[in-house]
Image (cartoon, rainbow, N blue to C red):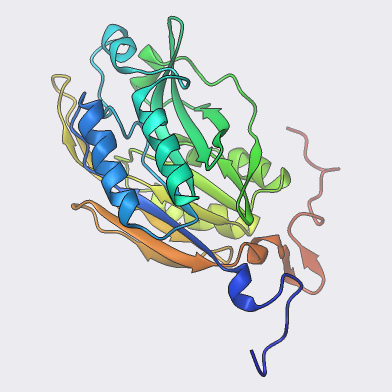
Length: 279
């Protein structure tokens, strides 16, 4: 690396991490097909961290809670998590996936972080969107950050983007990368996540789906795709299209998310005027 500064972790290549998303087109209710389709794509990828959409194994538009409970799975023993655990171990990678999680008679809209040694972390969606409020139980776990290879990873799900406190909390807990499994139907999130990354100086990965569902009369849903990877300066490193399934992996340096200064005298974390925050 002649002419380049040697960094504390060794050569520059040693610091790079391959992160990405899988944008899918699930078939509602076909857990086996949706999981195997995702697994087949992951098999092809060279990545350290890959993010799958919200409810990737089931599809999104449940008609009622009974249908949701029938299709949701427990974290231990569920087909989708079991298959992803096999993949993570085989490929020595980390996978974030959104799924319908069953616990007794409750069902959560959840995201799980899986590594080579198994389940690393579990997050249950805090801010339920629209009809989700009728059938899912609101998340009951605090936000948390987990080690995933060279990076510290936090999870949020889809509509959590509306609440800036979520991304800020994950940042204060030490997240380098915020992983956001999503089933986006509103057009605002991709642009908003540029701001979430910029105002917190973190990477973000939004994994959305494409396609349509109209399982509830009068409530057709068209998913916007536009999965993306955003840098700590708010730059979109890659954004997918809105109609086809695809995968994308980018090389990043997690250390870039630990530089919180915008100028030599302005640090976005240390400069917060907590003495003036009253709510």
